[in-house]
Length: 314
Image (cartoon, rainbow, N blue to C red):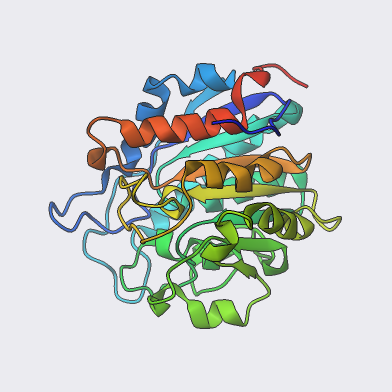
């Protein structure tokens, strides 16, 4: 894999081994195993390949809500506490101009990432690259998983303390968000009606396909990298990838980009001077016994960031 636009900044890695933002596993009834992802990716040499400073893991509170509270998010109090803890580590990671790579974990970690980025830098934007809209509210979500409503909560939508982590203002304004790659059109429970009337730039799956990725990146950057923001965050859910190359996710959707196509889309975002960091989420090691999928994710990150970073300052 070759990507021409690689970053030239110091890199810090933070582990966010959380599964508290997901429903329990349908078969075992236990928490899903996405919390193992940071360790697996590190074991494959990711830290060295990125030339990164490893700031360790932010450990989440225990999983509590095996039975969903009616019309509320699962583990709401725990995710709230965890988001604030993760924000503190992200804020430290951003010191000295470093680019922060957060290894998840479930998609709810975007809240802590954005909170930390906003505390460090001011008004931020968000490029949300995911096969799902994640725009349900606690009342609408079929699972009660914060991960299914992460984008909605990030822009302050929904009756939850998670929508008010930054006080009266959301952690990111909807007009500063680009949602890229969703292909969940047959699943309105992800909040499609509210998304359609929001100010979020919605760039569904065809925008990630060959011949469109560069144009999509430009459209997203015009929004998330505008003069109105001090910087922007990137969320990449592994399920945005085609399940033929990334089957190790809990909610695969047919279609989607392969690794090289996703790299083409992400390269201009990652290399942009206003890019603050990126979170990688939803890879499930329990579905990847030979670590093929983990290896592909390491290759993706290496192609985007690689050895040109160092653990020092700019």
